[in-house]
Structures are given as C-alpha cells and as structure tokens.
Image (cartoon, rainbow, N blue to C red; front, side, top):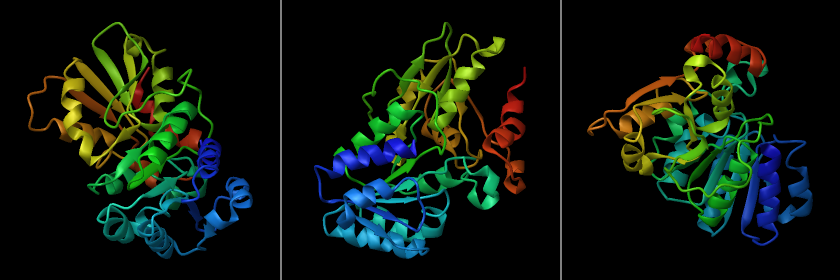
Length: 295
C-alpha cells in the first residue's frame, strides 16, 4: 500500500506544485523517488514529530496540501495537540499518513502497535478517515483526498494485500462498497486490510452465506449515513484491526444509538492482551484475533 501511496503522490505532484511530502526521518526505501523527483516539495523534519505537524500546518495555511508520512503512533499520538489545534480546528489540507496500521510492525513491539488510532483521530470533527482494504482502494482514497484537500488520516497496511477490486472503485464518504454478495441478510462490514480476513472467513460454514462490505472513507461527519445502510440487513458483523473501545465498530454502533434500527450489530476486535506482546503480524493476529472466530 505504501508503494501505491507514493506512486499516486508522484502522479499528482507532476501536475500540482502545491503538494508537499514531510517525513520525520522515516520512510526510507519508500520516499526516495519522490524526494529525488521533487526536491523542493520534500522535507525531512527529523525526529521531531510535533514540530513536523506544526510545519505542515504552517505550509497548509500558505495554500499547500501537505502529506505527513510516518509509522503508526508517531504522526498521531505524539502530535495529538497539534493535530487538534492546528490541523483540524483550522480545517487545513493536511493528510496524516500512517503506514503501520494495526499490527503491521508487531515485531517492533507495543510502541509500534497501531490499535488505538481510530479512537483518537475520529474525535476530530473535521477529520476524514481513509482506511483502504487493497491497492485499488488505496488508489481511490488518494485520488479522493487529492481532489478534496482537507484534514484527513490515511491509514495504510505495511504489507501487500490481495486485490479485492478489479478496478478502482468510485468512493463516497460514508458509503459502503460491496466486495462479495452472499445469500442471506447477514454481512461483514470492514474498514482497512481486514477485508482480506473476511474473505477467508467465508470458508467457514457459519459465515459462508455472508456478504462483505468495505467502508474506506468515514469519520464524525458521516454517521448519519449509516442508518439506512444498516437497515437493509438482519445482522452485521464488524471487523477491524483495532481495540474495541473507540474503534470502527464503536463508531458504527454510535451512529444508530438513538435511532430505530433493528439490525443486530456485533464486532470482532483485537484482544487488548496483545498490547504487551511482540511478534510478526501473522503471529499476533493468529493468537489475539483469529482464534476468536472459532471453527
């Protein structure tokens, strides 16, 4: 996904000199091509994340669309005050790119687990959350963000995911995308790379008739759109690579909390026991997520 991000940013930067990429001394093997092609549109702020977000905000005030790229918690929790006061409250065109979604960097330990970021980022009223499930959705999210500059959070998986779309989908914030059509009134609703997990779960007998939907773009502004989509289903099982509290499943449930919705909504989240664990993404998912789905 990070490769697709850079490719799309390069394509856009060829047409728009107001696109800027800022990193915090991370991203090597990914950002060099952009830096070489557009040296006046690339900045390394060093290991100073709060300052990095302040720089991005200042440039955005001068009319630039700034992409801030880093791993997991570095461009989010370390910069929470700057994101709130500078980026979101001023409604600035700054896109915060997290290239360590979920347990992507699980082998580096809990400092790199990105399991609470939705809880932070969805608190900001102007923040658009873009969490693509595959390369095609990544391209679609980038095209939407570039066309609609605003405070945004692009959450990318480190690894390469199986392609779920044959072509680039047309995205609308808050609108579900159909990935697989089942034969009953039950469905998986996903955001991010767990859509690939949903495809695997269809092999289990109890899930074999489920439909699968992806919601790549969401946020505080788009809760009102969820009721009508939910009402079409008897049961929705929300999947996400995040802790339960403050996550995507919580957001879905909040969207219908005071409305007449008969749909049964449940969610499957990564166990909080993973916080102190170190291991590959596969190992951690196998032991702190997948085993909860049963046989």
